[in-house]
Image (cartoon, helix red, strand yellow):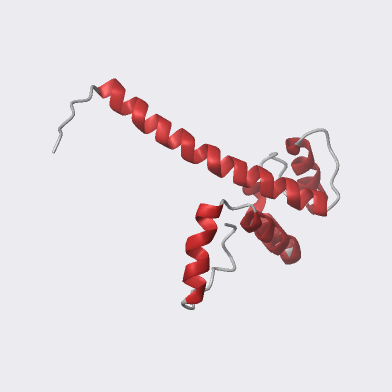
Length: 117
């Protein structure tokens, strides 16, 4: 077995790279799902943030420009929109996220209907 010695800065860089990689994948999932949802709702804007703010204003949620900030508000005010958004997020999962879920469904696993991902 090989043993490695890392400096504190090297360990910090490794951890930061892992965190950034994960958050980048999540951000892509959220942005793609949000974009798909807003296009189905026919919300227009110059960029995704503007479209999200327009949608948030239209349903009376605080306008933050981030879709996940208004999930609870969407769930309370318009259940159909929540389901549509949830399904858009789930369709945009990576293949590596879809495969284990498909196998779990074969054995009777049901996804949480209140979960956005």
